[in-house]
Length: 190
Length: 279
Image 1 (spheres, one colour):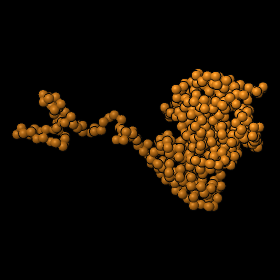
Image 2 (image 1 turned 180 degrees about the vertical axis):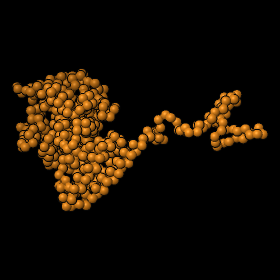
Image 3 (image 1 turned 180 degrees about the horizontal axis):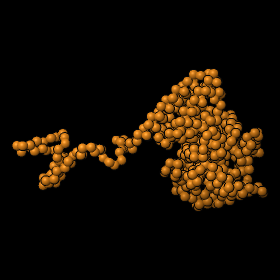
Image 4 (image 1 turned 120 degrees about the horizontal axis):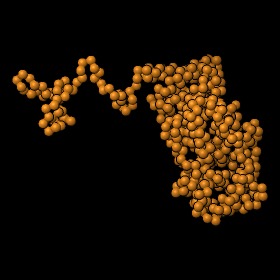
């Protein structure tokens, strides 16, 4: 609707306000100039000017609540920590130090798992597989390629803004290529 | 075109490579690594989907209904018939072992569902990428039907299990016509065996029917009822056949002049090799 605002001044001149600043809206435009009804385009003082219905962001996703934002920030913080630990892991040759770093990394993943619902399903599933894979290896014996795999999983996938199905397929390949077994969590016993 | 030594791995090998204990996986990978080319076929993929992915959906449904990992484990043990239980491929017991510290039933349930979703969604794709080479074979339509996720962690569409539901899309008639001579040879061999297993009896009947008329062939659900026979036909021309099932494969490999390699169920036992009498 091409509405406009008009304000009557003392001399009865009509001033057209093209910027739609607060004033009256004449509904005549949609009713073939017969309407004498005017609308207020603003809310009363003290009221929330935003619509009451659920807020939807421009990209179509639901706007996040404060607690979700806090959880997402924590996820990102721990992903950064995990990434740093994974990078240090690659540099480390001493098996004891390597194991300590891996334990630290494992703890970060456990924090992330608590917030798995903050992210998309694929992200939680990949995190679950990463934890299962790490639970079945001796940290002191991690090879160079396995440490690089861990770093790739964190930086190349878990830190991505969204993990698509194709990313899941590739990440499973990354695990297999490094000698990890991504299906170990549902496979037969040792 | 790839060249080198080639082996055909059947469904039992692929399932074990996915879901058996680490020693078994190692033994299979060692064997497969000794070849340049690992080959499989559409019916193998279809069987993998039918045995593994359907089982994963079953367990996912149980987890959703019972809401508890422990209850599902007990349910499977108590309710499924023993024979059926032995045939199961997915082992949920491992989850509690690997996440043993401070993990409650609720978390194990979540983790099991997460794992099963990954298997349902990406299992067949992973199998395809793992195989490397897939022969055209029967062109089994069911092997190409994608798994559809309707509601994450809840509802999945796997497509039909039976050829009779997809008659129009299934090209098996042409495949059997192409392999007619081979089918006759197998039929002759099967007819001469006195003490046949139930599976071989079914295969014999299937061959007799299909050689006389291919008209109602889909109604017999060939992939479902005569899977081993079809896999054998698909593997024709590949010198080595790798399986965990000696019984039926032994007969087919003999006719197809293939070396049969049998992976025993116990990973500590050595594999056995049988050279075809016709070679």
